[in-house]
Image (cartoon, rainbow, N blue to C red; front, top):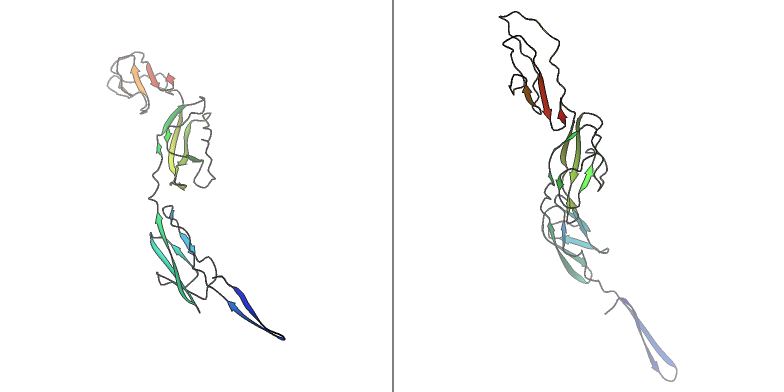
Length: 231
């Protein structure tokens, strides 16, 4: 039942011994692996566990290994002088891993680095699309006003999702300027104020729009508010 050399000795007294040998080679059944599920978009390689004279896959391939991108049942049949033997493996692929849930964030200038509102499993953070990931959220630089972008993924079944962008806007307290004191002709009209969608406004006239057109002489005072404070 095993590969090897077998011999038999026959004794024919008183003088003659007879010895005969035979070499037996048993071709084992091929093994191409256990049933396996791969990540979405991956390429699976299945191959014979050893060298055989002849290979035939149910895909029509005749190589010792094949690359798989579609789920299904794959069969390898090997052939040698002793005949043919086969092995079968079932290959499947996980669905595409969903993106983690993210929420863009606004943080005030000079405040501590915020913990971003992201939901997912085994999160991995990236400071740009080409950098290596880290399981720890990078620190947000709040010293400079402007937009920053981080990328984050989640991992399920040892499969990583695509990267999802998280926008972080660092803003300051409102900065407004109504310009220098101005004298205009009675029939002229000028608009004072500057729009910013992140501000709420309150004028000394009681108006709450970003900009007004003064109707009479006087001093006009504007108070602007955002999440970082009041000017």
